[in-house]
Length: 409
Ligand code: SF4
Ligand code: SF4
Image (cartoon, rainbow, N blue to C red; front, side, top):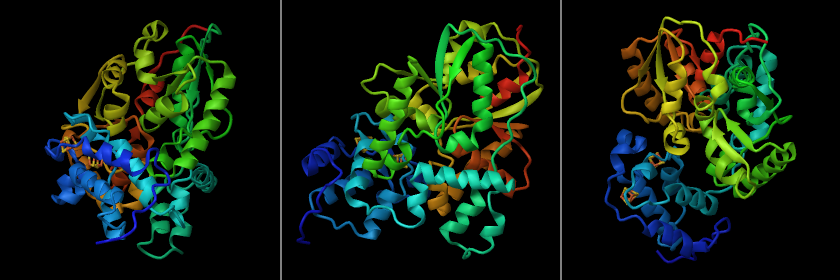
């Protein structure tokens, strides 16, 4: 088909750059068994190799950016399991982001809310005000059945309570670290953030938290909205630099990559995974934890494995709790379908992936389900709730804070 190439407005380097990125793929197919959407559909267009071929064809104008073609790119979870195993070092994430930036129409309607951290945070705070298990069940009943708005109202839960600290914490002012709160996580993961603060203070660190909602830019960047992502990163970068800290800790694996590669780039700030930081920390090593005789299944989010790259420290931290039995889910990372706002936008794929994950969880019959990403926590929590399964889903740091013995003041 002859047609004018679509201008690559969001692309640094234009079509040549995208073509060069896509041409790194030698089409070997080694990534296919690791791709969740390919496992579900068994069609090439729902595989990494197929998506790279689509991106290449879009870039050189051989393919029109029709809704049908773009749907395959849209179905990608951005889990990066393909990039992790690729022997040719194909930069799949950059191909995906740049192709979405260039060819996927800018979001309208609900999608503008789903990709906008500030607006999502407004919804989260509205949810907090309702105090309901899900933020607005009464609104959900007014919305058309099957609509994305209804899906949003019935999937985004109420915010978790922050447990009261059981006793005094020991704070030394010598070591200052910033704890990154994030945007959506600052509301929905606030119990995790409180737990992280408690553990860090008990280990002897003074914790700096930025006021208000700060976003790393991951949500808009993965949706291809590079201008918004860049603006979010810049605001957060400026705020972090003003604190004068050297070390920024992330609790949510979904934020870690953008915090490290976009926000902190060129600043001298060191972004560290909070588990890796605590596992190496002498102050944390001196803490004591009460026993917890329980079986805990550990779900490792794709971002924890493929982006953060730190999984052993999580097990090391949990091993500090006497009598806790940590059970690994098989074949990790295996996406649970959460993937940022994916579980709201693509419920069919997301729910199929979650079903698979929950079946693995059920086989282990745990008393707790642990995960380090807020999206996974919400999505898996909703799935368990719909099965009337009362297994609580929490962040490993929340469990550690619950079991912490009071340090000496
Ligand atoms: S992305 Fe990498 S692993 Fe997948 S087909 Fe291309 S070269 Fe092979
Ligand atoms: S990022 Fe994940 S869902 Fe997307 S193509 Fe790669 S493996 Fe498949």
